[in-house]
Length: 130
Image 1 (cartoon, rainbow, N blue to C red):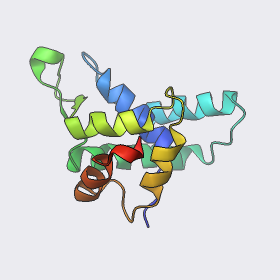
Image 2: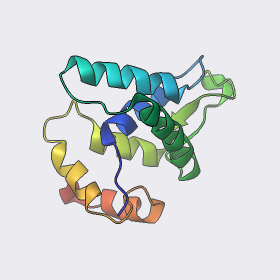
Image 3: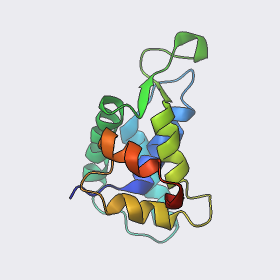
C-alpha cells in the first residue's frame, strides 16, 4: 500500500490553486509546511526528506491529472498550475478547514494507491466518503 502525507498534499494543492503570477515551488512550500506543523507542536521529521517528497508529489499530481499547467490568461507563466476537476475533488476531501475531514483521509488510506486515477475517481465518486 502506498501511504501519502495528506497534509503536505493539501498544502501543495492550495499553493497550486493560488499560484497565479508566480512559480510553483514545492521545496519552499515543504519548509513552510514543516514550520507551521512545528509551531503547532507536531513533529515534522527530516526536512530534507520532506522537501524531496514535496517535489515527488508535484510530479505525481501532474502526471496523474490532479494539476495541470496554468493557462497564460489565468496568470500562467509555464511554471505554475491550476487544479483539474480531479484535483479540486481531492482538495475538497483533504481540506483540513472542514470539520470531519478525517474520514475521507481514512478511506483514502485504505486504498492500495489512493492517487491512482482510476482508484481515486471510484473512491471520490462515492457519496459516503465525505
